[in-house]
Length: 311
Image 1: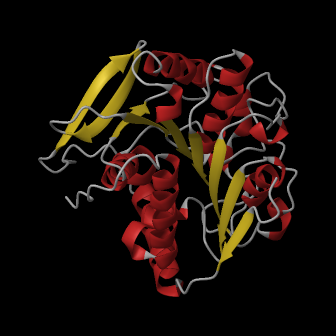
Image 2: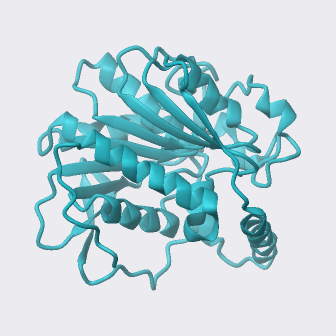
């Protein structure tokens, strides 16, 4: 653990936060009207990428995945993106936006986004086993040092659990891991579950969106691959973590950042769960993506900056 693993940011995002709050009010209204909630279930039939982008939906190891890369390229690097959604909600348009953001930041990426099996029908360890099999397949095409993991919320917990599984199985670990608002403590023992319980605009204690039993099943809430907070961080890859200051599960990130020997944590004041999804709406989101871009450039320092795609 480095002395300065935690970096705090205080940006003026009052307008952006108010917009997000309005969005949640609209979401609840649409839900009452039985209109599909795009954030949790949104797979827009009209979603499209720019013409320069190659978007494929395919099967890998028997699991549906979406892949994204720039056309006429043979990507040297791979980013495995594990979506959030409390292990209950599927891949959606928000993650297509994020995949596009990642290849704009690093055009040498091929982004692989699995539709892993969801609870309660498929509790732990089904999703973990699936993404582990996908990683083994990716190792046939990419060296481990050319692979990055990223995940938000439940996906953030899952990428850390995946790293534990890879280490336990004796396989080479990826170059680095990036998490946003990682859900890593099903036991909810962190202090933020108390002091942020009325601040978080996304979650509340006991929220049905955090149905822990649905995913954990018969396993302990402190099983290290259910709750990576309780795992062994030694010899894990470099770790970049983002968390909002007002998050119910803020402690889930800070606890890991405190113990992981190579973790860098960025906490943004007044921010909510997975705030980087705000993209251009909030300065905190823009700053987070600037940090991600700089971090990826450092991870692949041998790659020269040949210019960014702006499509």
